[in-house]
Image 1 (cartoon, rainbow, N blue to C red):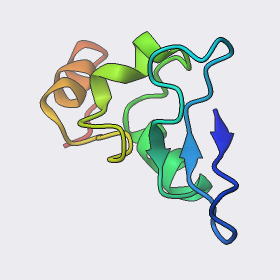
Image 2: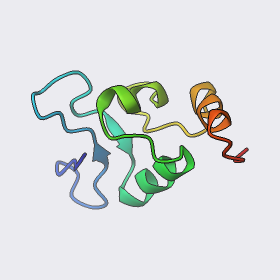
Image 3: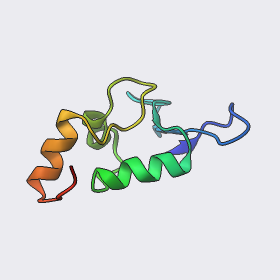
Length: 82
C-alpha cells in the first residue's frame, strides 16, 4: 500500500505491487482514514492483491465493506457488522 502523491492534499491510499503486477495503483481508500475505516470494517483482510481484490468493485472505488463479498466474509468469521 502507498499514498498516491499525485494528489497533494489528503492523498488516496493505493495498492502498490512490488513487481508492477495486477492491481498496481488501484485505489483502496480516499485517504488514510477512509482506508483504515474500510479495511477495519472488513475485518482487516491480508494486504496481498488476491486478498483485497474480492472487496473492490473497480480500480477507483476503494475497498467496499458493504458488498456481497464483504458480507459473506464477515459472516464466515462471525463478525456481527451489518
